[in-house]
Length: 150
Image (cartoon, rainbow, N blue to C red; front, side):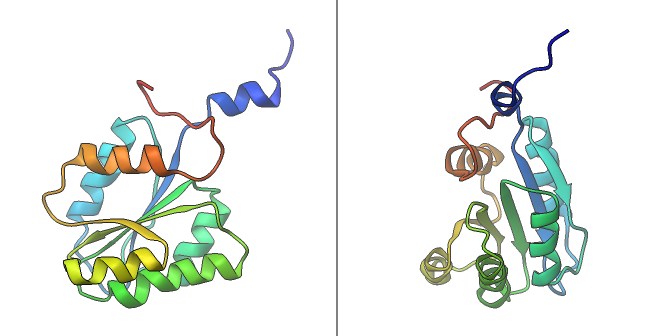
């Protein structure tokens, strides 16, 4: 039996997403709901657990070769911690991971986060289908990533 070519393998690679809880935010119910929704949409999901530092999130993302990082924060430190993850990735030469923010993020902060490369910046009540669509349509790595039903 002949081994599949690399291009054939890439066509079936699922989107890999790291869902992270940064800083001292111990509220993970929403992040766990996101994990399940992404998994049910056919993505591979890695959950960082609670109380991660930006350094840990960046290292996990690189080690796990993820396509996206969904960062969740409810304690108001999003203007510090989300951009720090983005900076650490850039310092390590990683520019192909989609960064998605979520949590309690005031409208007035969204432009600043977008300027740092953090997209979405979804708040409570955002339909899960909106988050899934944002990730599937904005991933940066490879053009052959897929989810169930696409």
